[in-house]
Every structure is written in C-alpha cells, then in structure tokens.
Length: 149
Image 1 (spheres, one colour):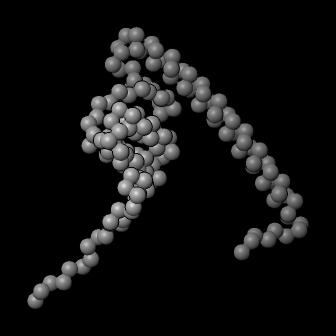
Image 2 (tube, helix red, strand yellow):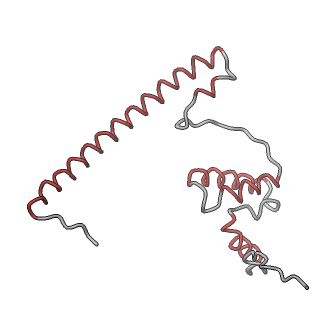
Image 3 (cartoon, one colour):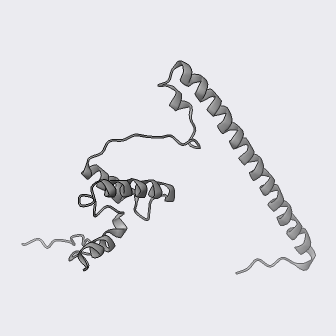
C-alpha cells in the first residue's frame, strides 16, 4: 500500500527527501575522501615500520590494501579452493582470483586440473568433458530410516 501524503504536506515532505539525498551524497563523498587519506597515511606508517621491523609491518594495513600472497598447494588443495571460491555464492572479487589461479593450474597440468571450477559448475564441466550429464546430478540426502521392530 503506497504512502499517501496530503497535498498540504506534500511539498515539505518532497523538499525534505531531496535535502536528505543531498546531505547523504555529501557525507558519502566526505567519507570516501577520509578513506583515501586514511589509506595513504597507513601506507606511510607501513613503509616506516617495514624499514625497522619488516615482519610486523603487514599488521598495520587495512582491508582496503591489497597484499600479494605466495602459497604452495597440491592438487587436492587446489580443487578445494576452486570448489569453494569459484562458486556463485562467493564474493565476486574472490571468484575472480580463484578463477585466475585455476586457469594457471590448468595451463600447467591440464589433465589433473580438468575438473576445476565452482560447485555450481560441476555438471556443466562434466558435460563439456564427457558429452553427457553425470549420473548423479544432485546429491540426495538420506531420509528418515525405518526401524525394524
């Protein structure tokens, strides 16, 4: 049911809405500027700490910073990361990183990593490789068991 504003109050309500919209936009731009300043200051502090205590420096960084990470994985671990992080439920940024990792792995060992992909893409990957859908396309959870008595 839509909100009906009486004609008498309609103009003041619309004005208030427009004013709040402008104020919100101003606060948002101020917040973004503050965030950029904070990130720059944190970067300066990081550089200063890194020169003296290099191992402690990464702890000063915020979530807005990007860090390079070097990891060593076996095939099982790569499949695990791929299944979880390339899935449609994962954050888009993480999906992109996992997909890039999977593509590199497929270039290195194409037969071993042929099935890399998110959980939601398994049936599609299987069909692309074998030309038919997998026999078990959906996991069925066991129902209530009957107790013999």
